[in-house]
Image (cartoon, rainbow, N blue to C red; front, side, top):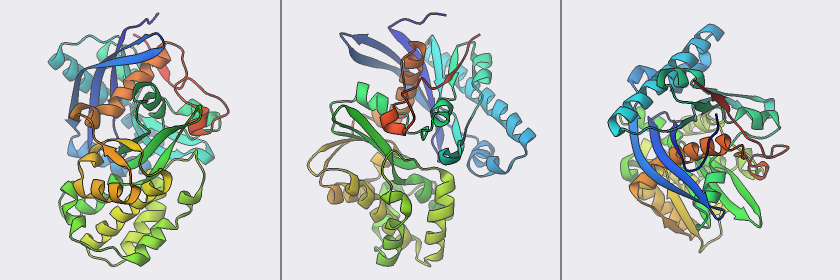
Length: 354
């Protein structure tokens, strides 16, 4: 099967917090060496509560048989959502690119898995599907993450920095002729966990945190975690948060307001550590809507935080995964060694054709 430009692809993205499945269909083209894209349609689909619980808390404790069965079942679920999306939008893409949901992200040990079987997606939809984008990079000694920076570079290169605030915050930027990118800190993965304890899904606009006060001892302990002193490339996973961050927060004895206020200051301070004041930052992801968090990030970083139109804020990562699918189809690298630390640039992914 030969793919040629322009190429229309559906990108699927599910973040660490497993809040929803983002689906974006876009058409990509390249003229005189410059990439262009058109977002044809985008939707977000909530997860059924039982499926979300499995993704967030149950999957790592499964037996091997249960894990494989869920890998296939979740792939079927993703495929059915794509079919719903295409029925609603009446689009006919040539390709699907699926991020899946990351579990067991421990690249130093060569361990990582993207759950959500691409074969099941292809079988459900009848559309060629690329999945498992991270594995090759990890086998080449890389972090397998982040993957979005090549899209930042080729689609959003007019900004000094591209910052996405989701379960984790991650940043990418150019240094000379190299693209640098890494995870900065956990964000919504932590905030939402404590909000769920009081029956809320999130701290909307940062209202809870804005009523609290910073606790210096806790802030110092968070900032002292060894990850922040490591050079890039580096990446974070939920296992690191559960081992290092939650114990500090749980042991603090603070009210929810003070705990979140301190954690917000930590997130904003870690951004400030890695940017140069006065530069432009394109901000996407759910955290871009958290007014108080954005205020603290702007104040501490001294940068211009630019929030684009809603479709880019909410679906930029799904858009870029569609772009990664296009790069795969054209046999062009999507994982950059300067970003992940792998032995070489590589074409991550696995194609299932029907």
